[in-house]
Image (cartoon, rainbow, N blue to C red; front, side, top):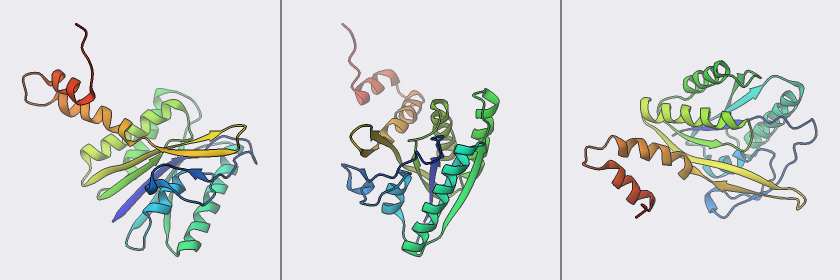
Length: 206
């Protein structure tokens, strides 16, 4: 099986990106391995010699991004050595400005980088806030329009500052809320809104 993992390189100043054990309530994203990148919690649980692993890294230009990307490459190398498995690391460069052109370009690059016949696992811990929506849009494009693509997991890592601990959360359901609303709105039924209200537990006034 082909598995595609998506993460974003952060802008933390050089030396400030700290490794944590990202604790989890779910067994399928739990690991005792310290990492700077929570996507490795997912990789630790999803790898296997029968799988083809691709890690897509979104990165901006700049000294801090370059430094932290080297950390990611080191983590990939250590993972490959530990498990004797290959990770195909794909770098996607995005512009620095928060403009429509920059995000359209990022969408195009992501949509192109995601192959057919794959399961997608995404970490949205790092990156700009508008960037999350572009990643979700690219995943929706792949799920809807490419062949045999599933969105398996979306995770978010949180560091509890001052407590020296971190936790990882499975937020896949947030991706599928929009997906389900789109499907329901196109249903051939008398009242798709009522169907959505029942599904999501939306109580109506009066």
